[in-house]
Image (cartoon, rainbow, N blue to C red; front, side, top):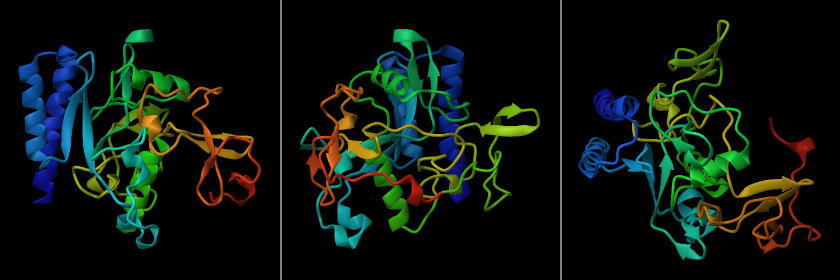
Length: 279
């Protein structure tokens, strides 16, 4: 049953979380392999635990290669830009299942993704980029291209994930709630990662990406606004953590109405108009 699937995957994830809390990073290859295999088994290959350079575990969700026409039939058969990094196609993405918390400090600080943790808040984008990059090759702050992929997948499938957007509950279904992880006075400010119902995952399943809606503000890489001009890194190049995303970086490109990329400041590029923004 759906409930059994949820209980099974959460039992393995909670075991991984508790192992980390009790023993810290896992560098033993046999233990890493056991954790990975157990999670792959209970999620039918959709979730895995991936270890960073220190042995910190993070629970991840597999997103297979996706064509644009899967998301909108009018968009053609091209590969979604999230699967193009430095001009090369990638067959899959692994996206954090939960909002991250951090361990360590300075050069030893790392983002970690586990269930039933209080997510990290009050972070600037540059620091967020750094604590993801410091995890090692392949790790990066979730990019705007990846966020857009997931958003359009939800739209195409007619499912809008709910979440902790009303003091620990969902405003549209107030019976849905998570476990409080931070309370100010009597007000629930945040809930522990992944403690809401399956309707809080991006696909309504125990194996989806949780807490995209609510709980706290998320940060993404590869996107910025400069004097209203929308600027991005090409395709999903922001997934390459060696790319410079600083203010002065030459990686930033502006967008023309036809979708072509040009140098920032070019006349006629797309702008963000706050007066017509929704919400």
